[in-house]
Image 1 (cartoon, one colour):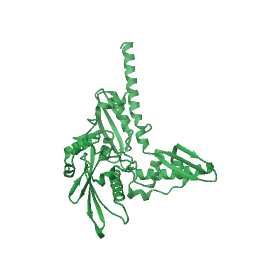
Image 2 (image 1 turned 60 degrees about the horizontal axis):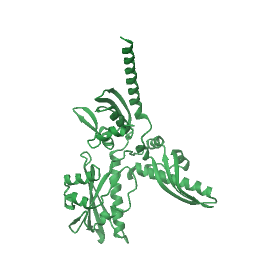
Image 3 (image 1 turned 120 degrees about the horizontal axis):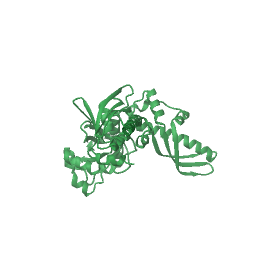
Image 4 (image 1 turned 30 degrees about the horizontal axis):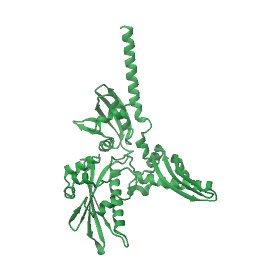
Amino acid sequence: MSVFSRVARQSSIAATAFLLFFCAVAPQAARAAESADIFTVSDIHVDESGQSAADARTVALARGERRAFDELMRRLTSRGDRDKVPRLSAEQITGLVLDIAIANEKTSGVRYIADVTYRFKQQAVRSLMKSSQVRYAETRAKSILILPLYETAGALALWEDPNPWRKAWQGTPIRPGLVTLKVPEGNLRDIAVISAELAARGDAKSIASAGARYETDIVIVAHATMNSGRDGRAELAISATTYGTADREQTIVTTVLTNANETADAMFERAKRETADLIEDNWKRANLIQFEQNSVLVAEMPLKSLREWVEAQKRFRNVAQIQRVDLVLMSREEARFNVFYLGDASQLKLALAQQNLNLVEEEGAWTLSFSARDRSGAAKSASP
């Protein structure tokens, strides 16, 4: 073997070793910004007075810290599990905070006002939830389009006025969480895509077109029917049906009664929040972190370039269920790897889908690929 051949061979081996090392350790690196955002609670407004501005600031930041922690728990847990979260002392909560950012700060001699962002330590929060045996989820859903369909006295309204149900959804935004709900504008283009009758009928083509218009695959038709309820009180019967994902098509049903001295607007606003909470609770139940179930899956991924594998690595870091990914074989056309994860394969598929990665099993073999809509941009986003 010539000197040049030996050098070329050694360089090839070194390059391959580096690639294998990089691919093995990359998923264990710091989580990407999207995942970290789940543990960041923003816009906590504090306003406290004390014997001095410094005293007021100390009290304000401590109380804001607890409110931020409570908001984080609301974000991660369903309503049925929230009462299981341990009541922590101020010192324990402080130990979970990584850092804070302060904006719009104002002080006087005895008063402190600010808007504070608290960033919590991911691993510390996870350890708390695990040791306390509190079920929680981290997977953030892709945006979901809500079609607020309203029915009263047999008449349907989607874009038509009056539609107090749509008005409620277009009002106060839902607090940020694991599920982001989009509300259509109700303009002429929306009217041309889908009608109230087609939404009520569950017309798949029209519903998919509405989702495509707002760049989402998942659409929920939230059908609210006004009825005469018990004791003469009006009641809003809500049936929210999900379209666009075969694994998760389902209907959530709830009924909201009017309260004494409650305005119609207030009742519709309350019904909107209840519906949004049920949708998010449903998502959380499907994506609970299962520490007791450790699994491994062997998969292959067709590649057009190395950049696509680099991009896939980035997306793996946004999937809370994935503990690590070990590369087994790499070529120009494909990557073969082992995925070590928590929970079952259906959860992993759902979590990967939120990163526009499709995991499919055929005859016992798993294949991972970018979604059709996303593949063209995958290599671009991975480029330096």
